[in-house]
Amino acid sequence: MSSPAAPARKSSLGGKILPGAILLATFLVGTAIGASGDDAPAAAPAPAAPVTVTATAPAPPAPPAATETTTVEKRVEVTPKACQEFSDSADRLIQLLASGYDLAAEGIQQAGNQDASGLDRTTSKIEDLTDDVTEARDDYNTDQAACNG
Image 1 (cartoon, rainbow, N blue to C red):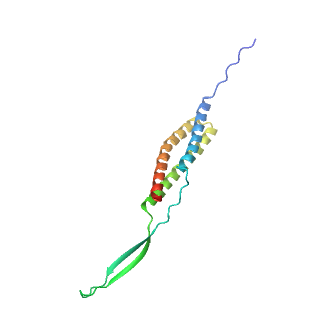
Image 2: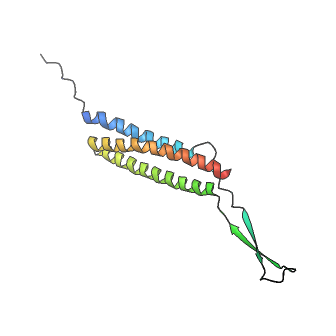
């Protein structure tokens, strides 16, 4: 007479790897969706409008009855402050997204190596980074709207 087979033991490591891998996949998809911010592609900022500066300098002192005026014109290109802020917020968002992809690669490697503690640390870093990415994305969208004016 044979005894009933003992149930197979599940590895506790698999219980940690799968949620971590799902979190990484969710982060990557969310980043791709969130980076777009809206359905329309980002339009390039309008070229800066030329600014003409006119300066009037008095002629050397002359008798009070006659005054001579000289006019100087100079063309100056000016980037609006809103567009400078838009550029800065785009740089910040790109840096955060690059950090997210680095962490995702690290997590995938840890999942492949079945390193549960390393995956837990990476998952925590990704969760912290997600709030920063959300804030940077919101700043990016606001600054883009201000620049496109």
